[in-house]
Length: 492
Image 1 (cartoon, rainbow, N blue to C red):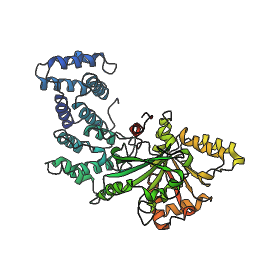
Image 2 (cartoon, rainbow, N blue to C red):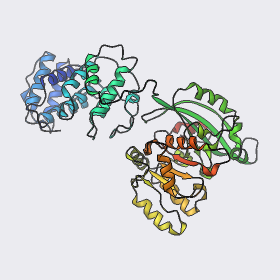
Image 3 (cartoon, one colour):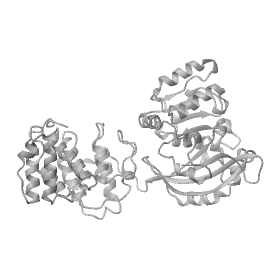
């Protein structure tokens, strides 16, 4: 970041310099003359600011010395390069100091003065750096903020603000205002006197609708995992069923384990028939679901042998109404979940394409021909669609020709396509896409909810499998490698 941004006759305002001074003095070791001299000498050796140390007058008083340092940085031939040099040097000397995040944030805000209300933000930063922020700040970030990479929930307040205001997106202000408004309304923050923050939100938040009272910050994710196994004391093969449940921010990102239930074993005939209605585990799980006020998503992790199983028709109640009527239900490939050689980069890249895609986005949602006679054309089509996020099947997965199914499996496991959708009967894509668009926003990222709304309106009975839609939804953030450690002989 070199050169002065257009429209500024000086690198930053007097208020910006005062904030920089406070932030620098906030470093734990900045009161030490030896530390300051080490930093200045290192800047003098930097390619960004060669010899700058000779221009900075030594001062035993920390405040005066820091002011002299900043005056020299501001008057340097390339002041933004000099500010970068100061930041990088302090990163090397004090990587784990909490003040480093505030320095980066201040640097970014000052440099983006043409895109952000810098004067007001300087006052907000001055307030925010004086108190302990609440945990899990990523829950306060608006959903589907464009250009925002994956959040872990471990980001500090300045780190998260840097991520929001330093995105490659023309709309930097609206997500920032929405986040600061949510922060100001947080129970641990609402009681504090933060006039600059509240003025900022009031001034720039008029065109952003306030969140509805009672909106959930998280979703409850229930993973029902089926592993091929032989039940103890039985000769016939079957499946071991294990349930774990998690919570994930509605905005997406890493989930955390909440609990798990003891495994159960079922013969295949019991499981695929009416085993779901006989699960004793559902009693405990039902209690967890009833006590939660958050949205629920149920994910069935299925082995390859039953990936086409109609899991959305499982029932947990004596009424036998399918789960797909009550909650979004998706399936996942257990093979991708447990295969340690999966190309996670491809998977992640295609998953990120979801945010920008619509259900009829032909670049990211594709419905190729699955005719076995055109298998070479299908292979080429898959190779040519590197941005594909959702693969639509006009033939049910379990009815695919074996060679075609192998290509579809490779698209999932090797190429990283995260989403598949198919009906229980073969048919053209257009009517299904049109129907789904009528039950949701049309955004691919909301497909689990859209399919759920479709199932609600369809009022599918248990026997009506041929009229349902199956959604394979592989969120890379919802992978729990420690889950494998629960089973003897498996390594997470």
